[in-house]
Amino acid sequence: MIVSYNWIRTYFKQKLPPPEKVAEALTFSVFEIDGIEKKEGDFLIDVKVLPDRAHYALCHRGVAGEFAAALGQKIIIPKQGVVNSGKARPLSINIENPADCRRYIGRMVENVKINPSPKWLQERLAVLGQRSIGNVVDAANFVMFDMGQPLHAFDTDKISGAINVRRARTGERITTLDNKDVALDPETLIIADSEGPLAIAGIKGGKKAEVDENTKNLILEAANFEPALIRRTAERLQIKTDASKRFENEITPELAGKAIDEFSALIKELSGEGIVFGEIVDEYPDRAEIININVSISDINGILGLVIKEKEIIEILERLNIEVESGDSGRLSLRIPPERLDLKIPEDIAEEIGRLYGYHKVPTVIPSKMNAGVNTPKDFLVENRIRQTLFGLGFSEILTSTFAPKGKIGILKPLAEDKAFLRMNLFDNMTASLKQNSVNMPLLGLDDLRIFEIGKVFPGAGKEEKHLALGYWSVKKKGSAILAEAKKLIERDLHVSLAEESKSGVLEINLDTLTDKISDSVKLDIKIPEMPAVKYIPVSPYPFIVRDVALFVPENETDGEVWKVISGAIGDSMNLVAKNFLFDTYHPKEGGKISYAFRIIFQSSEKTLTDEEVNKIMEGIYAQAGKNGWQVR
Image (cartoon, rainbow, N blue to C red):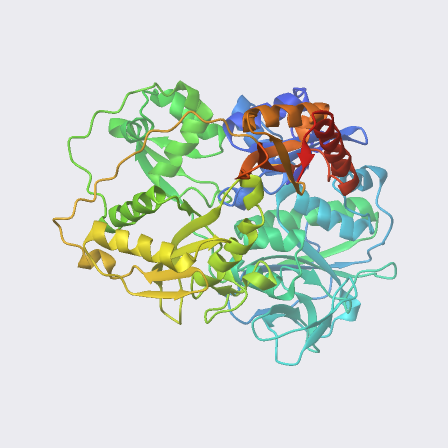
């Protein structure tokens, strides 16, 4: 969430530290900070608000409160409201199902003047990327970004009858404020009048009762909706808004009462004289319970592994606006602020105290040794024994995607078209991997390709199996013999027989019942091999070019001496030689000569090489060979 440094400053009497220090204090106490950006005389702080704190922290007031708690300062909360005149026309509100709408507050406002917002308000919204629309809409947006409660205003004169909070009926449609025609269904909660939909509850307002420059009378709305319902609807309709983000993360219904007062006060300030506010109509079927937590000082210190005095613990809790009553034997009775829906159990309280006290103060303690043995699952041992066997045969392990373009179990929201199902086998991915890796065999200097995978497959609804797939590819050798040898060796090591499916250089084995078949007398100890001292270098993302050169040279010349001449001819371009190796030696019976054939793989780490560039290098090799009296074969 993006917060304005200038906006945060309005909550404090004293001068705040620079933005970097504010971000640092928040980082060490509560939030990750993803960045700071200077913009239009302000600093935007990108605060990473995780779901556990989204109940109260998706607003400037929540972030300011955390900053105040971190530094032990006090924030100034504006106390605003409008005296009810009762002179406005009456308002009727009906909630169809309290489980969908926990609270709905409405208020009639008459004689409103729709004007452009003052400069300060336009600037506050603009720095957050919000376009100024008019004083009423801007006021709703300001209060939402300020205290976290989404708000809405309807044009009273465009509404017929009472305000109804209900599920949409089949066939109903709404045109949203951004002119999108949306089909509604009974899974969608709406705000409606006697004629039809006015808004998609908690997500988007409709055009029918839109506030415009001709609006004279308003119905103000501050409500609280069931979070999961809003999240499902926003996802289904693909309409994501600042309001839906806050509702789906759940905010306390208590916040709506404070928000309607601040909304009203700001409209009065922006609209001038003559405005009339009606009575607040508050439909609140099941009032939110006050959360009380009892915890002891010893419990808190035990959880944290610290020794913090009672006075300091109480001081930290009060910085978080938690009301504290001390009892006997170091017990505390805590009254949790309504917006802190994340605080429910003593462990939550310990966490709050720990983060503000400072986790860096927790002493380092070496854990005591465990005497109890650890039982390793047998299937884990079996799988690793198979791995050791295959590694010994020169196989490499691969891990491919569990998702596939076809199958019997579909994914509700696939990441891509080719990942819309759970895979039914390992064969398809193994075949694709063999094809892809065979292209790079010259670069790797491999005569054949041996790979395997152990993974889950889903052959049908409710079916889940673990399979082993072996893959082999070579130009010279037949894969079936190699795969049969690997299977035979696994069977010998584990003293079992394996059922298989084999085709096109791939052998697939169902491992589901394998563990039960293995006798307890079979040793399955995991052997950790010694790691060789190897140096890893990054793989170039650019394609390689293969060239072969075969030269007849005097039989007293060694292949090493011949390659030294070739590399000398390549010269400064040797940095483009990714790999080279001798792949053939031919010694005629007569003539006193021997032929060495080298394969050279050219590849750049900076660009794609062209044939012309490589051909020029090869011409240099041929020229040097001619100078040495060697014949190109």
